[in-house]
Every structure is written in C-alpha cells, then in structure tokens.
Amino acid sequence: MRTTRITCNRHRRGISTILGTLIFIGILFTAVIPMYLVMKQADNVYAKNVHEMEILDQDRANEAVETYFYPLNDTSSQLNIRITNTGVIPVNIVRVWINNVNYSASASIASQDTEVIGPFTVTLQNGTSYIMSVTTDRGNSFASSSGTLFFTDGYWFTPSLGIHILVLSWIGKYRIYVHNATWNNGSPPEYCYETQGLDFGDIECSQLVDVEGEYSVHVTKKVGQNWVDLPGTPVPVVIVWPGGSPVINVIADGRDT
Image (cartoon, rainbow, N blue to C red; front, side, top):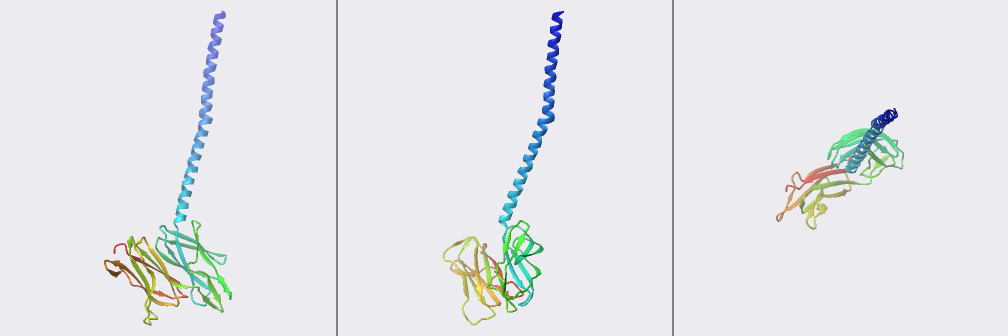
C-alpha cells in the first residue's frame, strides 16, 4: 500500500512539473513574444523615420534658389518676385517675407526653371529699406539676390543692376564679356571673365551695369588657335527696372564645343 501511494505522488508531481512548464511557455508566448514584436516594430518605425529625415536633410541641402524682388513701377506699392531654381531638385515656395511681414505663396519650380510670382502689396514708407526673402516647404529661406530695396522721396531704388552668367563646361579656356547695345559709343566691351589657364568645371561671373537697357553677352571658347562663340551666343539681354528683374541670368553651354 505504501509503495502505491509513493508512486502516485511521484506521478502527480511529474504532472505538476509539466503543467508548470506549459504555463510558463504560455506566458512566454502571450506576453514576452508580443512585447518583442512590438519593440521590433517600434525599431522599424524609428529606423524609417531616421531614413526619411536623412532624405529630407539631403533634399534641403540640395535646394538652391535665386530671387529678385522688384516693384511694378518706380512708385508702385506692389512687388513681384522672379525666382530661378538653380538647384538639382524641384522647390516649392510656400511663404514670402517682406520686412518681417509674411505672405502665403504657392509656387512649384522645376530645376533650372524660372517663375514670376506676385504681386505682393507692401506699405510704402518714405526713407524705408525693404528686406525680403522666400521660404520653401523644406524650411530653407533665401534672401533677395538683388539686395535690399529702398523707397525714398516717393520712388524705388535698387542697389545694383547686373547680369549673372553661367557657363556649363568640362574643361577649356573662355572669354566672357558684356556689350551695352543701347548706349553704343564705340567703347570696347567689358570683360566679365577671362581664362588665365585651363578651367575645369562650370564657370560663373556677374557683371554689374550702370543703367537699364539692352545688352549682349558674348561667351567664346578657345578651339585650336581660334576663339569661337558658344552655340546660342551672343545672348541678347534686356534689363528693365523697375517692372523687371534688376539681375538677368544667362546660361551658355560649352561642353560639346
């Protein structure tokens, strides 16, 4: 009789051990593993957010915009903005700032394209300078490339007029010069840039001018012993300010010459 009871007790203890193990496994599957899966999902979401932020930061760094603010005429209270996307990705302009007053805007500009937005109405105050910029949806802010506008004695003034020239190039020798076609008095053209040696990569130069009017931009490249005009040049340029941008962009391509 004693032997039977001992065997029964041992059998019951064995069953209890198995049940305890099963309960532990059940707890493991119902609590620990779901928690692990939730943590894994959270890690995936975090990694995705980090990747998206890295892409956003890269896109923000790749934005490049030139902006030119100008009044509709020399006494107008309305300003237009000429925006050129000089970067490699599209930009979306969402806000315009003029002397800490912001205006909503909506303009999508593809790479290397130019758009004019406005007009934006400002309060004219004699003897006041106007500091201006635009903001993109990625958070970048770009100040006016033409500098500050001034309103004095009932008229607008801009600090400078000019022509900005970009030559797309691999390698070569170049001469870039600007000729005033309106006030042609026989004077030689003004050199904006002249190669001192072989140039590698794109070339940029800006030529300030004194007055509005018609100009021509000549871009020549040395081919053999001769200087030849790049395709599409000379480029006619008309500066009309106010009522137009004070700075005009010109692009010439010397990569296949």
